[in-house]
Amino acid sequence: MEELSIPLNKPQRKGKAGEVSDEIEIYSEITCTTCLAIMLAAVGCFLFGYDTGIISGAMIFIRSPQNFNLNDGQHEVVVSVTIATASIGSLSSGILSRHIGRKGVILVAAAVFSVGGLFMAFAPLEHLWILILGRALIGLSIGSASQTVPVYIAEVSSCKLRGYFSVISVASITSGQVVAACVAYGFSFVGVTHGWRWMLGLSIVPSTILLAGFFFMPESPRWLVSRGKFEKARKSLQRLLKHKKISTDSIAEEVDQILQRIKHSQERHIERQYNDTAGVQIEKGKNGCSNISIRNALIVGCLLQAIQQFAGINTVMYYGANIVQDALGINATNATIAEKQTCVGIAAIIAGLNFVFTLLGLFLVVRIKRRVLTLGSLGLVIISLIMAGVSESIIKNSTMSLVSFGAYISFFAPGMGAMPWTINAEIYPQHFREAGTSLSTFVNWISNLIVSLTFLSLSHELNTLFEVNGTEFFLYAGICLLGFVCLLVMLPETKDVPLEKVINLFHTNICCCSLERIK
Image (cartoon, rainbow, N blue to C red):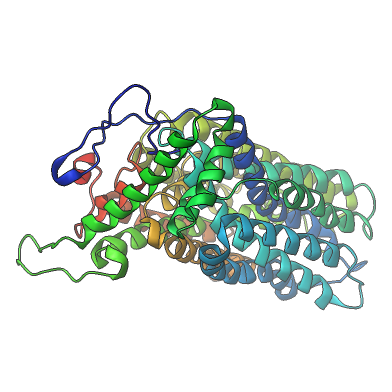
């Protein structure tokens, strides 16, 4: 467990005013139980990825005349209703997570996802609203999971491995997209009227695994301690560390250490703070954290999530097959089955790239600082978006367009794909973590909704206005450039900083990347 001290023949040191020193022994070895709990929790993110990946291939068939015969507006509604309800799910899950725990929210999300999958698979062609209802339920589920899973993983991980395990949750999203793309390609050969039902219906398999498996996993000890459930926290911690045969006294001391660090984190923010230049006392927020610290952390967290979506990543995921159609010059209305299968297959390759380079993020996150990885990724994303726009609007070369999309995915996945989730799970104090992650995840889904709901229409309007294709990519590149400048100024470094101390990086109006801020 992170920042939790198991006495290993080394006395605990005290700092000034009884403060717990950072030099105490840290118990950071991973156990099989902890690893299993994290991997099962990550299935919730897999569901997010599967839905994102499967809808791209399924919609090519769903919108065809043989099925629902959708226009562009209806297409956007079917895709975007999931995102709209996901934003609601992410916002409400913060409240639910505080009251029923991380585990309870994840289990509810798995059950709702299973019901939504059944609605989608058996939606009659005469009733589009049933398909939309299924998509809405799926959205509530993945919205809740996307907020809660990173928090759960951060709270049961050790300090040194927190970033690594947080990236695993993002890798689960991209692996879900790969599996979905392969499933979509495979069932594209089944037939126009039945293949899409299998694509959507198979989503209940991982949700059922999550529901059955996570039921037996322990709750986050940090959440239990924050709710005053000390005996349950001891039992949960004992389960997470059980194969080490740790004594009951050591577990009790470990729980006390969690409580002490949470209280100490809050007490540090209760102390008087003054504006360095004006000498004016800063207003304090409830529960002992200064308003300015929470405000700055929340601004950075929400900014990261908004930039991630306005970079256009989910347009590639949701509309990947359609983008490939445009890049290859295939008419969506008159496309043959073989052409549709080709587009779905290429979209699967793009999803595969996303997964592979997210795995690269697992390697980089423990070796490179979060700030460097985030800004480096975003800078390269801007270049690849400009390349995509140039290839479609000026050069008009389909091969270069596909190469640009591949480069975009490769640069995005290890940094901007993973870091917004990782950093948001770290930067809020214990008493504000549910609310902070809930609000930032809500911003992610709202931004996702804006982009996905407007992509087809915006592309058409911009391309008509400028009389060339690909102008939307220049727009996304401009937004990313603005975001890059903001993050360059505001984003601090959180790597290897204990969870309760990260908030100390946000005391001043302009954040910096130095670890000196926590001293």
